[in-house]
Length: 361
Ligand SMILES: C[S@@+](CC[C@H](N)C(=O)[O-])C[C@H]1O[C@@H](n2cnc3c(N)ncnc32)[C@H](O)[C@@H]1O
Image 1 (cartoon, rainbow, N blue to C red):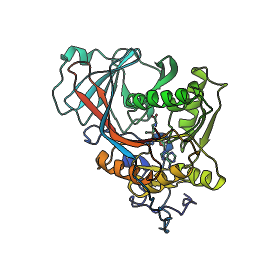
Image 2: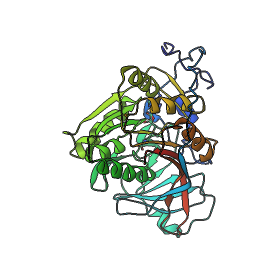
Image 3: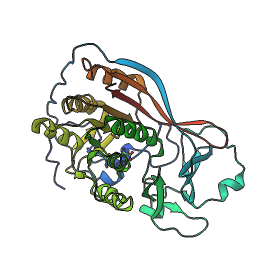
Image 4: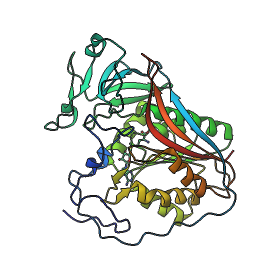
C-alpha cells in the first residue's frame, strides 16, 4: 500500500493501526460519545508519514472574549428521537419508528424500565467483529433494511445501521443545529457556513434550509454519498451546498491561502482520523492549528465558530481555554460545556460530548 502523500502532520498512532482502532466500537468504553470516522477509514491504514515540523500556531493578542461556562445543552425526548432508558452498560433509544439497543459505557447505573421493554425492540448492536456492516446488528422482530426514514424538525433524512454502532445521526448535535439556525435567520443577510467533519450532513441541511450557502467537508466518500442522499430526501437539492471530500486541515489551509471566508464554522473532529489520502488527524496535536485557521477564514462580520469534541481525555475547560485564546481580540463570548441527552424513563443525563463555541454577540 502506498504511503500517504501528506507529510505535514506527524502521528503518534501505532504503525499499521487502522483508523477505526482509535474509536470504541465495542461495549465497555467509558469515554463520552465514542463516534467513529468509520466511513473515512481506509480498510487498511497506509504507513505513516515521517514527522515534519508543524507550522507554529500564532499567539493571539487582545482582550479575551467574555465567557459563559459551564453551559449544559440538553436534548429532550421528542417525537423524532428519545433516549428511552439506560443502564447496565447499554442504552435504549427510539429513532423514528425503531427502538434500538446499543452499548453505552457510561451507563453504570441500573435500568429504570423493566426487562420486557428492553426485549421488545427492533434492533440490537451486537458488535460481532466476524461480521461486516449490518451484520453487526441483530433484529429480534423481523429483518430490517440498512436504512429507514427519520426526521429532524420536519427535515427528512435516513437513519442507518452502520458497522460501528452509529445510526447516521448524533441526536445531541440538535442543540447546535437550533442555535446555528437561529443565528442564520437572525442575520437577515447572506450567510456562508462551513461544516468540517460533516458526516451525513444534518448540520449542512439545517443551515441550507435556514438560507445559508454551505460548504460541507468530510474525508469519507461514503459519508458524502449518504449526505447527498439526505439532501435529496430533505428536498433541498436546489439549495447551495458544496459537498467536498477532503482532509479538513488541508481544506482550511487552502481556504486561508485562497482568501475564502465564512460567517459560521462548525467543526466536530474525531480524536483520531484519516483524510482521503491517509492524512493523519490527531486532535491533541492538530486542534490548536485548526481553531486558528478557522479564525483566519472568518468574514469581517462573523457569527460563530462551534467546536465539539468527544472520546478524549480532557475537560471542556481545555477546549474553552483554547477557544478563548484563539479568539482573543475578536470580542464576543466563548461558551463551553457538555452536550447531554435527557433520558425519558428516569430523567438521567447522558453526556455525549464536550463543546466550546465562540459567538460574535
Ligand atoms: C463523528 S463524525 C462528525 C459528526 C457530524 N458533525 C454530525 O453531527 O453528524 C466525524 C467525521 O469526521 C470525518 N473525518 C475523520 N477524519 C477526517 C479528516 N482528516 N478530514 C475530514 N474529515 C474527517 C469522518 O469521516 C466522520 O464523518
